[in-house]
Length: 412
Image (cartoon, rainbow, N blue to C red):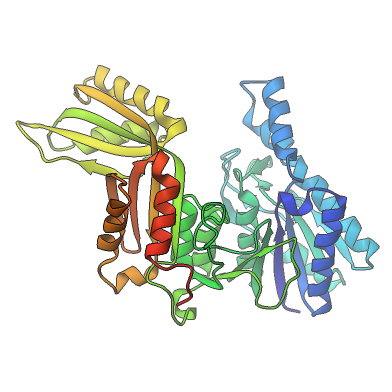
C-alpha cells in the first residue's frame, strides 16, 4: 500500500481530546488505503517542563542523560496516540527511536539522522499493522544511547521517514493552516500560499518564519519529499494547507513570495581593524569556534590600512561574540579600536524565486522603506532574497509597507 507520513506538533497533541482529533485525521487516511507513519511531538509544554527539571537537578548536566529525559515526552504521546487508534479499531503500535531504529550521530541534543532502515516497520505493515506511531525528535547513537535532534526536530524526523519509506507525501499538522506571505499577526492582508518552492521555504524558515524547521526543509529539498503544512484545528479538503514542492511544480508565482522578519537581531561593528590578507578569517574563525551564528557581513573600504567590519548575529549571542573578539585581540590575532553592539535592530527580508528573472526588486524595496522614513543599516542579498537591518521600532511598519508594495495580498 502507499505510505503517508503525518506529523503532529505539540499543540496538536496538547491533551487527550486533541490526540483523539488527530487520531480521527489518521483514520481518514487509513480509510483511503494508506499505510500511515505518524510522527508525534511531546504534548505542548512538556519538553520545557522536562528541561526545567534537568537544569534544576544538574546545571552542568550529562548530555546523554539530558537526552534520555527530554525524549520521554514524545514516548508518552506516541503511546497515547497508539492506544487511541486501537480504540478506533485501527491496528496501530508505538515506536521509540531506538526500536525503528533511527540511527543518528553522537552529538547529544543536536544529533543528525544518518539512516532509517525500514525493515522493522515494513515487516509489521506486512503483518497487518496500519499505523506506526513514531516518537519524533529522537534516535539512537552508534554507542547505543538515546539522542535528540534539537528543538523542532520532529519536523526533521517526519521528512526523514518520508524519504526512507518513499512516502507519497509528508503532512505537517500544526496550529496554523499553511504558509503565509507574512505573519498574519502583523498584517491582516497576509495571504495563505497554495504552493511554495523548497528554496523559498528554506529562506523563509532560516529568516524567522517559524512554520517549519530549517533542517526539515533542507532534507525535503534534497530528497524531493513533498511537504504539506496544515492546521490540526480546521476541517480539511484535498487542497488544504500549503504544499512545499519543487519549483517546476509551480506554474506561476509572484516575483516576491513572502516577507520574513527576525526581531532578535544585533549589529556588531569592529571599528578600525587592520586591513590585511586573512583578516576576515581571523575575525570569523573565533566567532565560529564560539558558536556565534553570523549572518550579514559588510566590510568598509580600507583607508590608511584600516577598515570597519560589520556583521549581524542573534541578540542572545552578543556576549559570546564580544568575548570571542576580545580574546582574539588579547592573543594578537586581530587589532581593532572598538567593538560597537547595536541590539535594537530587526532583520526584514523579501524572498522569491521570481527575483532570478526580474530586475527592480531591490530598488522597489529600498524606495518603499525610504518613503516610510525607515533607515537601512545593513543590506545583504542572494539569488532569491534581499535582507536589510533596520531599527527594531520600525519592524512592523517595514513589513506592512513591503507587503503592500509587492502586492502580496493578490495571487499571481
